[in-house]
Length: 396
Image (tube, rainbow, N blue to C red):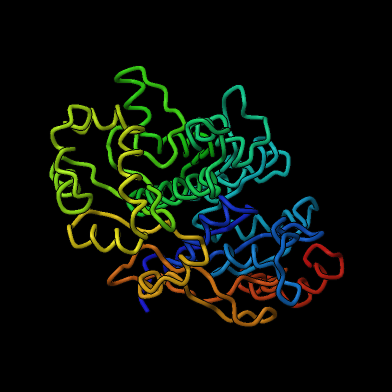
């Protein structure tokens, strides 16, 4: 199978989520990803359950399509091995706290001197510069600083974090697109470069509607439940037996909703609901009116009417319902791979379907240090040298 990044070598020094997710996607695209894990237990997610035959499911989820080395970078011999590997690398990704890579002797300037075409990507909580750069930063702190937590939740409720690690994934996606852009530049010029990605910056860059409201009108995004900030009805509504989503966010859809779904032509004459902006201003009142109608019938009834009327709508699933949905499975968003210890492992599929160079699961997540010998042989180490590194516990 053709894959877009076949022939690209990526050295992955990162752990937990943002960096490993980035390198997983590069591996899905065909890159040769070599994950370097610390001695003494490896990636921190190896210590997070659930476990299958001693293997962490968390680790396996974001480390497929990688080969694994367990290497002591704090030792001179381990550092020498790493630098030899870097000579053959196209990119390296790390997520140490700013300054740690320099202390280890594996910072951009040092590695760039060995390999001038190297693309070096650092992912951190707050970035490599600025007054917060030395702070430790996890996803939840980035959500707090970026305003996500304050704007998420019910209007009268407490602020809550987004249900997924959104800043981690935003940073991963930002790193992916930046590495690929740098790789295109390198293919054209032979030049490597340094990339500085932060969880805060990456998440903040996604707040485009909220920024428009603030820059344009001085409005500060607030907790609004499932409701949209400038469109209505565009949110979740309770029915007789549950809740559904309705997206009648323009005038044509609103008219269809009133006439064909709710059976309320009088709403079209109501001055509160005359335009989209007025409906948004009176969203709380509109919600009560719609839910009074929806309370008469179960969700299935309303979803059928909405679908027949051409109005975007849908269920509000629990996660197990999501993974069992026929559309999700038709789109191959649930896949599996065979792991040497864990057996058959289910995983998520590829969100982009490329016609010529599709993503593929070519190998499971590595066991700790699984490919030490294989990789060392590729970069010129002899059997005797490898055995010596093992005996000294430089590799595990």
